[in-house]
Image 1 (tube, rainbow over the protein chains, first blue to last red):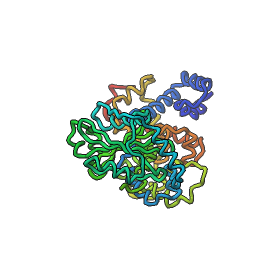
Image 2 (tube, one colour):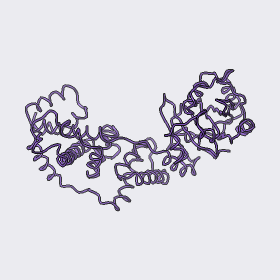
Image 3 (cartoon, each protein chain N blue to C red):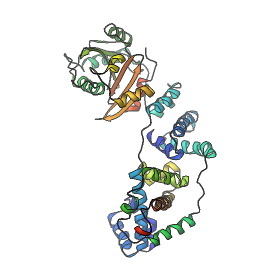
Image 4 (cartoon, rainbow over the protein chains, first blue to last red):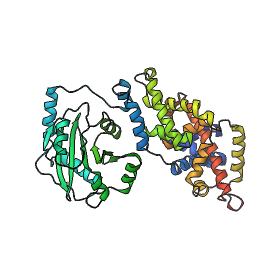
Length: 267
Length: 173
């Protein structure tokens, strides 16, 4: 063992790439060679400083959506699908549709028990769990147009029922929380549930009965979008549609959820 | 997309430029999609597009610290080493008080080839093998660039620490 051997492997020691035996052999050299010992400390110090002082950032929602929007003008191409890892399968056949409708029905059971927490994101996550757990019953399972029409007759805001290419039907549910009328839309896409909570933006901004955190409000004011990921393995996307606040929750990765929500223009 | 965005941030040192570089990267990927070899690493391909885009566009406009006399750096490193005592608490004494901006600034001053491997290894947590695939260079080259990059970074950080009086006559290491 000499200094040259040591220095060639110094980064491997820092990055823990060597066997314990080899590491010990090299460290043994460092105990008797002050220069190599110092070098090892210097390399470790540089790595530690970078790891401790430089923080990774998530892509800002507005940047993400700007890129998705510019690329989605070419959506439907194989490239877009592969780049974002989203399969945009052809429309489902009637038989598959029927199976899906039954599948969506099977998600629900009677009674809708809203959570006590007025925070919209917390409510959305709780409702999503209730959908999965079977404690929310759909009031209508039909085409996007019919679900939209049904919900809009009951609430005082435009209901957003995005069309998703591989999903020909969806479920609509109405509820009232603290006197505020809410609409809920649920899809089942390739075995994954996508739940969208919707409320009148005026009610949201008034606060009190239903609320949003300042962080989310700021993001919406700046970009119209807010994305939160990995809350118990669920992705959350909040956005503004006309005068409606929409909050989508799904177990799909955020990229796939966003791609689904922006796949086509909403009604 | 986050890995590309963070790399863009470190390359350009500006959020606006990082946004533009990210967007340009994806648009180029679209234009040259037919050049992508199926079955190869898509992330590495996007990364190379970003790196080349940066070199072709942004580096022309910015004074890039891309030339460095490594022998000179090595001599300076030796001086630092000789003036420092043998101290097991080097990290804590030297860099504990440095600011995040100091480290960012030091990283930005590294030549691009060193900066890239340090970013990919120490910030993104990629293995040497993954970095080699990203950059299309041998693993041995990754190792040697990382060694030099970290050593260079250390000398820059030492200078910042010295300027702030964390190290020096009264605070010899």
